[in-house]
Length: 279
Image (cartoon, rainbow, N blue to C red; front, side, top):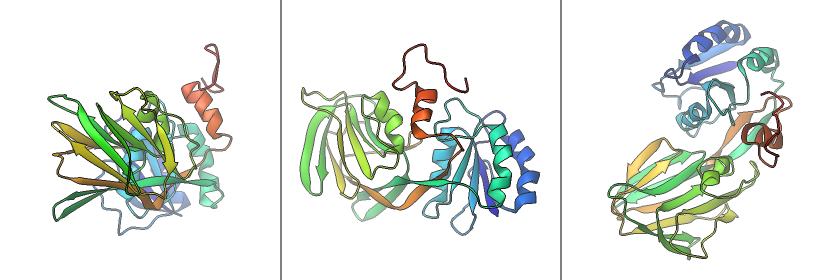
């Protein structure tokens, strides 16, 4: 087995746990890249598994770092929520023999590709959670239009817009009142932010369609990818979002089903006195 070891060394415990794992992984195979500061270019390297230490933010960064060469990610939770980073440190250590023999389950998930066109210049962003168009200083309302496959379906004034994947539906989208999507659905959800209209509601549509966002009066507007990368907008850009040609691949912890994770991590659908299985 060939491994990438990735993570965020600024998070407490990540460096120490990565060093603890190093000899165990070397005994099971080869560590192709050991990178805790996102400084290594991975596009010319090949691995069977990317072991990512930290929290969900570390996994989002790792997914973008892997780019169009996605490999299955095993997330070890050293953060708070751990929605994507399913393995505890103890579970990861116990799971290594199965990894070494290739006996692990992987689920595939939708990623997005956002193309920003400014005249003749093109910028592409590959991401996993969501694209957010948000108002920044001087914090005036933005006027936003959304086209799907060339048809205008939404135009409003407000604080912004979220276009989320199913994986990202439990993040900013959920906090903004959007729906939870099944993680393996081939769909995007569009959620207006503080829309100045009575009939505006989140919209779920096929990921096979092309989404185009137009801005009017864009003073202070920003594009935020996965809550981590920010791009200032002037209104002269063309923004197009579509399904990425690659899938995010996640190694699943045994016994960790999606709805169990929703209950344990978010207490979704439970009474206030519900106790998670692993408090």
